[in-house]
Length: 241
Image 1 (tube, rainbow, N blue to C red):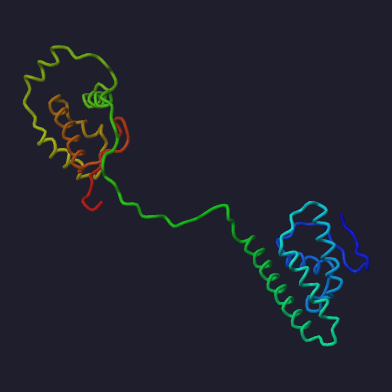
Image 2 (image 1 turned 135 degrees about the vertical axis):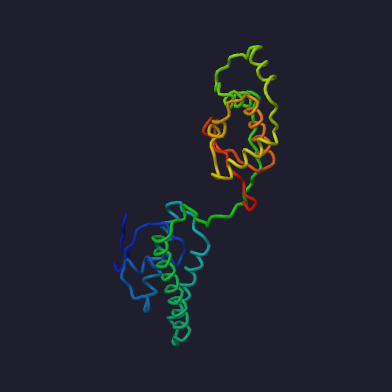
């Protein structure tokens, strides 16, 4: 709701202001007053009417609004004295504060259009590499990996007695020899899939020894296994990584 003062010189709307300087700037801007030559009497009248309207609307009025009202009354009373030196000093002080506050508002408006406070951007932090193998395996997973290395994949067929007799009659393959084999295979290509590593091994003893060699090298932090299934990658861990 817009109203006119008794003198008809100023007009305003009821709004919420951040402080008394904000209210004064609003009145000066809306009524096109010269900030360097403010008509204190008219401004005081409009200021007090605004305070009364805020009170009538049950708005909380901070003490700083009342202090500014007393300040304007003091400037008006000083202007009635024969000498106006004190009035000019008080006017300059008020004008300086209004100009400073106006500059702060303009700067804040420019920053508001330039900066978003709803997000935070920071530089990427350097996180040290942790080569410890922390994945927890269920016994079933180890068993399925063994079956995959044996070429039986997820087929859960129970081995027969003849299958064990064949293992016993074959030559003994040491895990140490397979550790050397695995390291050479990975060293040439830097990485190799689980399936490729066991592709050339048809003997069951070699497959078991190679599988145990991979587990031993992972435990000793010489190799790293990424992924799952036959196509998981076995990578060599360099000393500087």
